[in-house]
Length: 104
Image 1: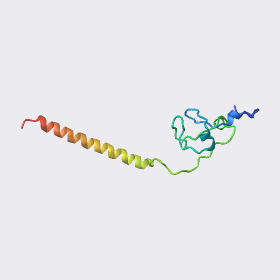
Image 2: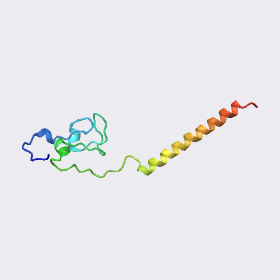
Image 3: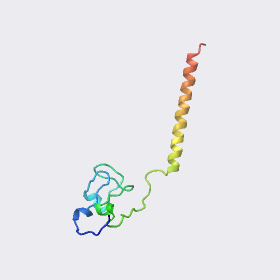
Image 4: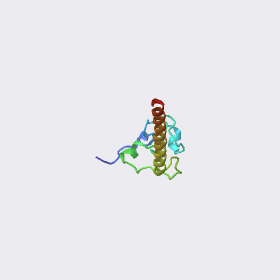
């Protein structure tokens, strides 16, 4: 149940890493791309305060930043290429072993 805030406890507004709870100085200004303690990507999961998580104040603004990771289409192509490479490698290995096993 969402009610009015009756106190302005400072700890409710301290931003923390959502993965490990780290609340260092780098998280407060939004200058870090990763958490110093656990390495969580703060661009995907930004540091939030308790008040933000509970909905007492608005959600943090996620700034558009250049993507560090390939778009999903590129990931799909890379996965298929890796699969085809290992499948071809396996076929070559089976062909080699079967030719070695057959009497000449």
